Image (cartoon, rainbow, N blue to C red; front, side, top):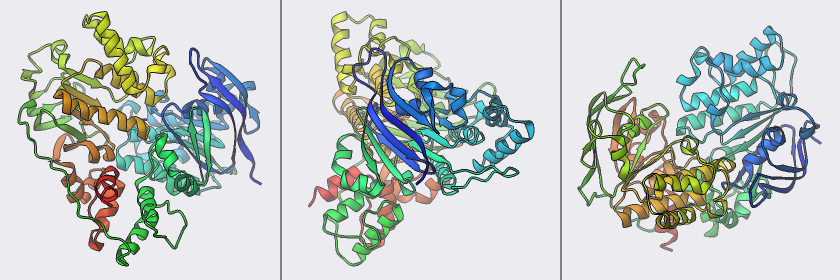
Length: 589
């Protein structure tokens, strides 16, 4: 029997002023060396559970905790946090929340230094952690100059250097471009497979346990030992990945878990009476590709003629014009944006994609008028951003930041939504009507009296969207709006965006790394690299005709697009996203 390293007994926790428990009478065990994936809808209690494990609850977070939590036989409520830190490491959703040092090497060393180790031991552990995370080349870089992927690697390295028996990672890939995301996942798999951690120059060995909280499950599923699913404060499913996802498919879909495309495709094939001879429940992408390839070769299944979307821009009214735009930050040596020319039309669902640090957010800030072009000009609704005050420019613009915490500052959810309306002197009855509507749209009516920072990351993202939607803006600008959202919330918010376009003459401009969202909703996509636009077309052409180009730019098409493209020679039609497959293939049956 493996040693139990995490155990909770009848654990409950309720935040102040909350209507329901965030954790509701839960008992669980995790054994040494396990790699456990914890998933579930936004606000289901995943992050709260993680905070209970590392001692933030009850030592630092206000609220009522009941039951018991043990980590390596230590009762977390009875020992100080610093006693737990050598046993359990925590990588937070936003790496900026836990990076304190100026230089990378100092940040990786910080935790080990706080443990009181001697200099030689600190050096060995820091070198080991940086080598494992492949960041030795940036050891002397300033932490605030790093990309999102680099920051996340530094956060993981600073935990690994302490050599805890357990590492908890809360949405570790949520803000990363597809290739940076894959790099982090590959590193986690390497650490997981290297069960016996041997530290150069020491005799220390031990099995490391991982608990990973994630919404995007596609790649992690490939090497996860066990999946736990949380819903409304309870662990409702707990078991082997294939069993969890195939035998509970409809239930997981109903509670907002983002089921990986490869599982959706294999489940569809099985529902047609087909079977795979290698494994009962194929989870890995290569197994599903092999399964689909065999049934197509054997002509066990055929697909109907596909009707693809028409992306013709019908309304030629421009809402944004960018002419010869170049931009350089005051302290930078080179231009962040370089000679960009672009027109955006009314009614477009316009996506801006690119790897971390490519210039996407800077382009968005120039469109919004937060930044002014160093060269060239930006025209929004006929107004030159250099010539009009931002307070006038943004009257018809709604903007949601990449990190929702950067725009939340009121004492309750309702006050947050009301703030802009009150600032613009709306009558109170109109404020009440619009606020109630916004709360209902984003599903926060029951949480309206709570403090914004008592919400989960996904709920805070929904709140940030509500503060923008409440005034029905003509142009909607979203910077990574899908971060931390479960499938149900994601669908709700993006369908709402489509309604604003269709029924309220809105235009949506969105920066995102979520290729599934781009493939399903966008009407046009621009790909940014090194501050320049390198691709500009509809999503089908971007993903179908530029696979090699996208990978060179640290981007990837959706899993279903990748699989169907590889199977084209066997009669498989190209499918951009799973919703399209449901509509054109399943719906045609």
